[in-house]
Amino acid sequence: MGAALASLRFKSTENQDSVRECGGIAALVALLAPSSSSALHELAAEALCVVCAGNTQNQDCVRECGGVAALVGLLAPGGPAAAQWEAAAALWTLCYRNSQNRDCVRECGGLAALVGLLAHGHSAAVHEAAAGALRNLCVNNTENDDSIRECGGVAALVGLLAPGHSAAMREQAAAALRNLCANSTENKDSIRECGGVAALVGLLAPGASAAAHEHAAGALSNLCSSTQNVVCVRWCGGIAALVGLLAPGNPAAVHEHTAATLRRVCYENAMNADCVRDCGGIAALVALLAPGGSAAVHEQAAGALLNLAFESEQCREAVRACGGVAALVMLLAPGNAVAVHHNVAGALVSLTRGSVPCREAVMACGGIAALVALLAPGNAAAVHQNVAGALVHLTSESEQCREAVRACGGVAALVVLLAPGSPTAVHVHAAGALMILTSESEQCREAVRECGGLAALERMLACASSAAAHKWVAAALRNLGHVHHVVGELDQPN
Image 1 (tube, one colour):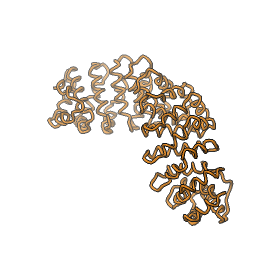
Image 2: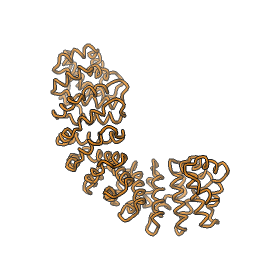
Image 3: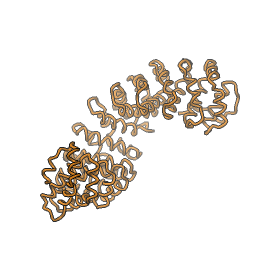
Image 4: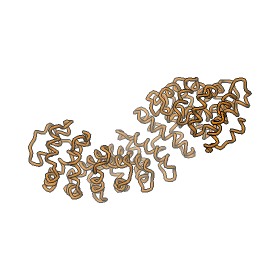
């Protein structure tokens, strides 16, 4: 029966359901008993893998029949390699998008058993299946993350990344490490201490598979929420390797995770930002903004440019010189994802901080009208905040930009953002933009008055939720002829 059921097609949900409804899953689990032969163990585990692929009801049925514990039993040291392989593969399938089965494997002692299969002496196929099972077991499961680390799983998985192992094995090991460090500070540190950062950087080299590149870049992105790991990536030559993966022709998923890693690597790190620029990374990131790319790639590329431009005047100029301002402004168009709008507006904030050429470039390609359009009610507060922040920098010291904001309805849109209920950061940036707009433009002052801005500013002054908001509102009212005490210096909001 095992061989016949194993021949079923993975995508035949009807066949899978029929097996369950006829009692076939319970019968297969019974064949995993110690009294059965190793050949029956192998075929039954293989069949369970087939009938449970993508079928949550069957996955649950296996657990309820005691199948998880039985499969874990086949992983014991000294057992037949073929049965171990099929059992690990079945657990890999059973734990796909099934949190109850992930917990059950841990409770049955399966994590230590699977880590044991990563040791030297087992076949490449066993290593791959065990790593794949661990990959699924640590998705959004902190107890499993900790248990795998505590039984030596991190070091064992890092060992599988070494050159000379099969491509499939390295892919699954990288994917498992990616999941292990997604939500665990301890695992991030453990991977670094085991040499995993350098090993993952090595997996970025040309010649590795696209899947290996994707998982290695994704793992490094998760790891780089740690400052120590960011430093380690640079020391290992990871920045140049990551920039290399931005080349045209690589899959969108590789571009997405590589840009996400560079985004984290450059966060508040001017040295890394300059290194990315020197490696040609800015032009490569700008190229990812081209129309037709995926929203996820656009989001991460814009986020990386945001952090690069924030840290370095030279990076700001490099983005402008390779057409990045125009590419970013194009992504402000209606219909793009909220996360794209948020990061693009944030990148324009960074680019226009103290850069007259970047301000002029935004103005020249219609960026002011596009930004003002995003102030419309219904857009996310985070988008409103970044757009207002960009307008602060654009209108500073530029009469032409101030007039452009007024002409396209930006004054009224900013006044609307002062309404009660908006987040403090939105209030601060909107008030800051209005303060700059009204500082030297009688037309902007008149526009504020006409759209009820005086009342909105007075109301906000009375209940400002932060000192920064209070200062900017009071300064705007002063520009409008309503004098209020302003505390401290008036630095522009970032």
